[in-house]
Image 1 (cartoon, one colour):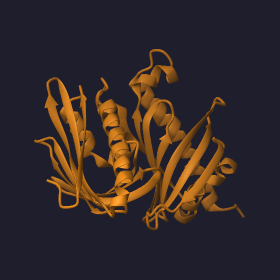
Image 2 (spheres, helix red, strand yellow):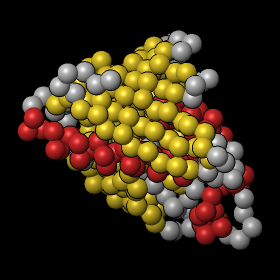
Image 3 (tube, one colour):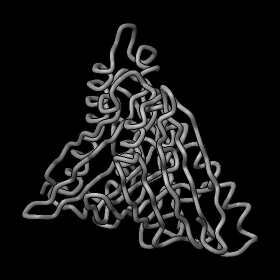
Image 4 (tube, one colour):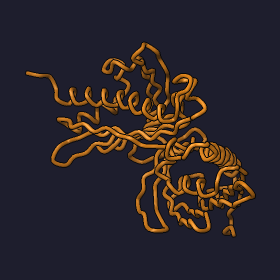
Length: 315
């Protein structure tokens, strides 16, 4: 039941995908940026057996917003309930649930939101943004879960780590991606804009990059990047390569006994594009190997150049 002053909206979608598979995709919030178009980054704050708290950064009406939510997960009932603990205007309160109802040979996904706005004038815009994001999330969830391949074959994470002389200098190298065309051989052009979007001390960057492949081909991607000073730079590709339906990643800066930088990728393969991109007869396994090599090679090249810049000129 909605609280006084709250409004309720329900979005539904029927899909032949199994209810359990759908539930598990929603339950793994840290993978959302590679699954859901609006999600940019999720940081898990607490995790118990059936509850968790996380902070999420997401694009809402073309702006990056952040909020903290608490969730309760019920794998037996195939239900996830959530409520925002810290909101951003125009939202005054927000909560709801995901339910996965077995329906004949498929599933009915029911996504419910109970919400209130800071003032009534903000309601139409808030409702429009909620409708747009919910419909995108439902469609993306069904699309991935309906694939004939196991989700774990299509959605996976890999990383590379390199020791660097100075973590601070390496961070500065990664942050200044507007200089990459002059610093990295696989980058042809970068357009970078920065915005303040109510995300506190986190820097928000909108980056369009043209990458040059080993055979001379070029492709353009667009990413939203979040810069956590000295700690990490995370990104979500808004326009991923043709082989992918989703791609998110992070540059993680470790400072223990030795400074390190880790390049992490989480990707979701679009199996309908494999033969188009890689050639007739190529498989999901081929796509995984290709992505691991190509994306990993670019990241390793960036790490090596960042390390060389951090080392400074040789006397």
